[in-house]
Image (cartoon, rainbow, N blue to C red):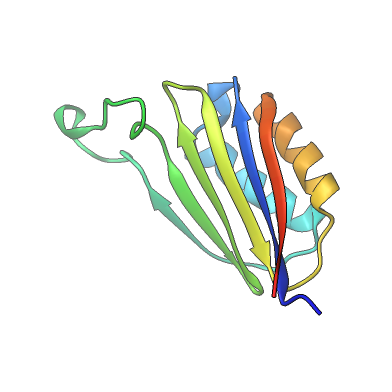
Length: 122
């Protein structure tokens, strides 16, 4: 019997207006409701509040990382603003509908899913 499941999504050509704290927080609220997960602490790693001359400027570092802890594990997002890509991991020891999660996530970020992988953790 599997311990849990992890959905790994790489989405390219996204609408970067969704790459901000307000939008990402709404995404977490809605995805957790959709897949019936209980939200806990939300953590951010980005340039919010950083002086302009200290902000990230490289394509592989300019963006936001957020971790939405859930009762049964976490959902992690990495946005790359310049590349218009988002990378998402949804991991839970509670069963969830990965097809619904992928569809919702693709629609939220308005991009193209270039990689989708579900791993059963044992």
